[in-house]
Image (tube, rainbow, N blue to C red; front, top):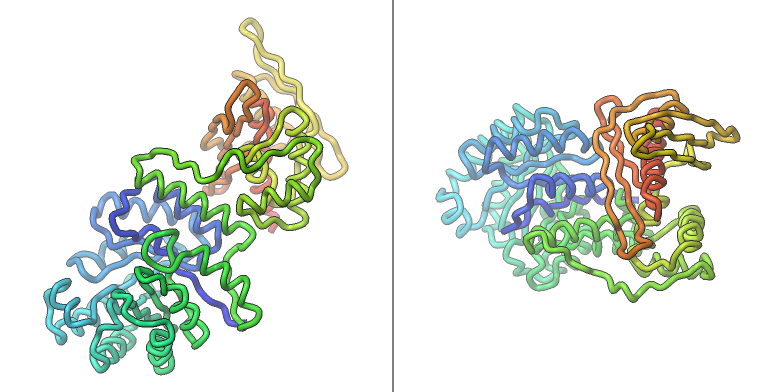
Amino acid sequence: MKQIKIADATLCRDNSHFSFKEKIEIARQLENLNVDVIEFPEIVNAKADILLIKTISSFVKSSVISVAAGVGADSVSNAIASLINAKNAQIRIELPVSPVGMEYTCHKKPDKILAHIENCIKTAKAGVENVEFCAVDATRAEEDFLKTAIDTAISAGATSISVCDSAANMMPDDFAAFATKIADVCSVPVGVKCDNKNGLAIAQAILAVKQGVTTVKTAVDGTTVPLDTFADMIKNCGNDYGFTSNIKTTELHRIVKQIRWVTSNAQNNNAAIKTTDDTSVHLDKNDTIEAVSSAANKLGYDLSEEDKAKVYEEFLRVAAKKNVGYKELEAIIASVALQVPATYSLVNYVINTGNIIPASAQITIKQGDEQIQGICIGDGPIDAAFLAVEQIIGHHYELDDFQIQSVTEGKEAMGSALVKLRSGGKLYSGNGISTDIISASIRAYINAVNKIVYEEAN
């Protein structure tokens, strides 16, 4: 099977005003989704943008972190500085190759552009091994000049080439033939970036893939190939045409939905966007596993048989106390599905607290066939509970963050707890939900511990 690489450019969207935290969250979700390359725009604010890339490099280990350069005078050196800690680093030299683009974007004549391409790539190669040359507006370039520009880039050390239909002026079959002609003569992998202004980007990309292109640039919304639609097409058609990708298809729509929520908030000054009708899911304790699985699928989750069983078990626990709508169901899925195998699981707990006694926690956790009990006193019920869990597992992990929020409304609202533990310099997050916020917190802590134990064992 031919492996198609997906380079996501959501963070490069024009007119996007993501906060530092929003950029980190989008990068984190793309890494979770297994995109091959996470693209970042050219560094504008050296201090803030370099810090951002360095921060993201601390947790993005599987995906390639790709930073654009080429137009600004210091762009290549800034890109190198930002990627110093990245496990998989790439610099993209993005330069126009059409007569109009060269004149108005770079204010350079063709011979000067060729010299600039060579200089940028050689400089980038001195800092990172992986350098991509992106021929911007390639479909409007003169054929001989485009070939010379690509040859110049490869001779200077480019490890991959991308051609862009920035004007969206080619029909899908013509673009596929155009990209294939380049791929056939290139000694390095060739990718494509297609503008979707005419709604043809997906067709252009998939036809180019069929003809030999290895990488497609996508984004969540924006003006290029839609990530979720393209990944779905690979999933649904790949077996018949001999190609596949690394995307986690079971998590695709959930993660894209989360990214879309972040991008929508950024566009609307952090105003929450409700994307699902609350009346579309109505479940109670009498519903079957098939009904719950169907509702999960309706919300965009493609669950495995194992995850369906886990979700249904948790659903029955919650449904015994209240009816379940889409918010509750999404919280249940986030809590129990798509998780690592549970080394530890909560059996029961007893919390004693008050304003005249110290808080204490008695917790029983199951490990394999063994039930282990821990009893601790702490500074409040949550602290006591966490200390009791540490006593049971025999290890202390640094608590990096702890958040509690209500995910539903009303007197029987479900609470969601997020726990972030640090081990070996790496963060592990766990989520727990319950109508009892202490139960949610304990479950979140154990969920994070399970991830640490699983990763260390594997």
